[in-house]
Amino acid sequence: MTDFAATRARFRLPEGMIYLDGNSLGPLPVDAPARLETVMRDEWGEMLITGWNRAGWMDRPRSVGDRIGRLIGAERGHVVMGDTLSIKVYQALAAALELRPDRRVILSDSGNFPSDLYMAEGLAEMLGDGHELRVVEPGTVADHLTEEVAVTLITEVDYRTGRLHDMADLTRKAHAVGALTVWDLAHTAGATEVDVAGCGADFAVGCTYKYLNGGPGAPAFIYVAPRHADRARPALAGWLGHAAPFAFEESYRPAPGIERMRVGTPPVLALAALEAALDVWDMTDMAAVRKRSLELTGLFIEEVEARCPELVLATPRAPAERGSQVSFRFHEGYAAMQALIARGVIGDFRAPDIMRFGITPLFIDEDDIRRAAGIMGEVIEDRLWDDPAYRERGRVT
Image 1 (tube, rainbow, N blue to C red):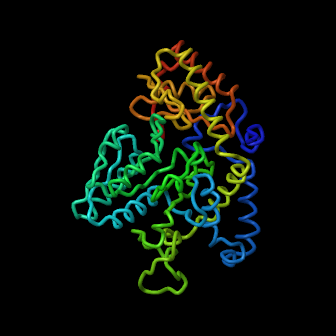
Image 2: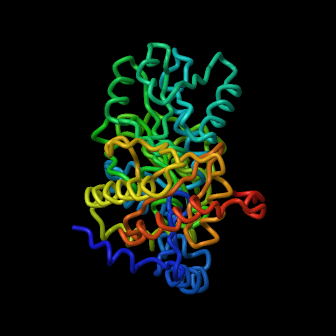
Image 3: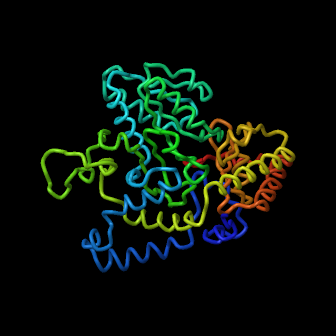
């Protein structure tokens, strides 16, 4: 069983704040500053360049990848860290398309994160060989799986609504027509139970600064199924994905297995902060996290709907169909969110009208949920959002 009181104590949270935005940026693990100080002082400071060998910096992307692999149901040795999520989407998608050279359709849905769609658009245009990004409604992906489709590109949890795709079912149906799958786990890694190996996923990618609490700009990860590991070619042939990086050969030879999906120099300091976060995850069981998440999201829906009849639930009501977030539609959603933030309830806004709240059991409990819903009731009922200052939009919403 997971002790959620113990995990809560492992995060730094400002006094009085109810932080419901861990689906956008997780809070600071208490141990992260000391971990970073140790790496900077004792490793970088004392070892300098010898730290690549003596401190194991060069191996860190694989060792951290295995720790994340446990949380997503991956086989050991098939997850590696580095770069950004968009780059990992590009690598996975390009590799999948090359494995299906006779097909031209990338199938995605309108609930996918725009950056994923941009990567797909750009790759299709660059290939210049008739490739097409086909975007359909989220609930109709299975209906559009035909023998034209080379690969599906799906974010498992819709970033706006929190709607959860059925990975096992869609993967099985994709494989039935000969298509491959790329799953974006940005809103599921650390939020729901994931079993990429058990579901037969071909590729999966994700970020670590949301539910995994790795910090702003924390590195992304990529998973390649064992059956593809020595066949998938990375579109970005970086020197650390080379079979012998320090032989400095003029031509690229891909490294065996997941190592070929490395591109550039490992972000050692960022990985150190992520390791501190993963120490907290080592205290958890994902089944317990998921059970607790559904309890808290259900309570939040119930409490908010009782106080705020003007808000329209955008998240599926059925527990099995949602991730670990709750979203409501409101015509003044941006201003209302700013009013909440001013009163210590931190969520975020997604255009055109979504008020989005991440429910993260590692540091959120029932009291937080009830207090947040009570403050929401006051903001909506008393029209506290109706202030010109709350309509002024910053660069990040």
